[in-house]
Length: 112
Length: 113
Image (cartoon, rainbow over all chains, first blue to last red; front, side, top):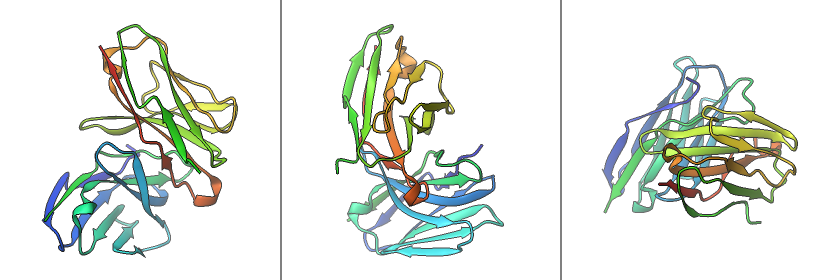
């Protein structure tokens, strides 16, 4: 399968805590992207990490990539109720162009 | 910019009826694609296009047709709807400048009775 697989499937935390979700994939990639989907909405691009990068930050988001283990993690620091959403990783396989496949995502719930 | 616009947002069909889900983008993106999202299944790629006049099949193309006559539009046609096509459909586009970052529409929720 070309898609990423997110883990855990569901995560519930308190506001202010950090949330970590993981992604594993099976093929050689050009980059790996993370997306967020709020309930009933389309996916929104969060961050892209290239295959030659190991870590990337964007605001409260921190993404790591380990190509030797074919895995990535997304850390959301100081979570807020507004972070409640589903999060998807999408590995962009080598030679696949813009064709992305998605797993079932991690459903994050941030409680007040 | 409106981004990616999908119409209709909701549609109910009877088995055997046909319809077209519309998708338009105003970002001059070369790449466009259609996904369906079902509970517990994630998003699955139906068809995609790398430019006007060029389309190709994704993971689950059966029962769906597409065409790409212009850069802006990428309609998805259901010729004979089946209950198994009940789903939420998302259109997405991407341009060369953003290294494959997909921009998604808000989705079209289709129910086939």
